[in-house]
Length: 100
Image 1 (cartoon, helix red, strand yellow):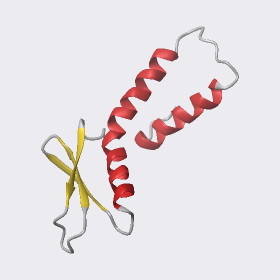
Image 2 (cartoon, helix red, strand yellow):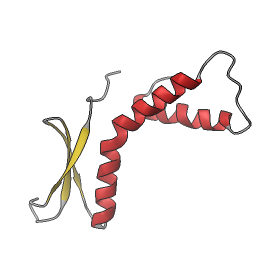
Image 3 (cartoon, helix red, strand yellow):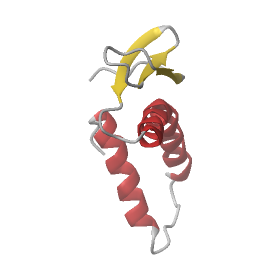
Image 4 (tube, helix red, strand yellow):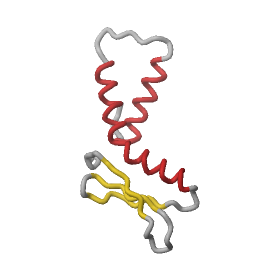
């Protein structure tokens, strides 16, 4: 499977769409990745969604690193950690289709 476009990603507010509505452009460097339309969402919600999209590569990298550091031989999980580990593994699989 192909990897995602490397970050960092950034969001720029675009207020000059066809109908004059606000949208958000998502970039990786000079690469235009997506235009995130506001649709019927409140402006603050649309902006928050765009920021979450932009943070996704960094969040994925941090999650992978955390799991790598904490997946050592002999590491003992407490009672809550197996569920958390499963959630993290599922999140990575959801974004990359990697098999855990």
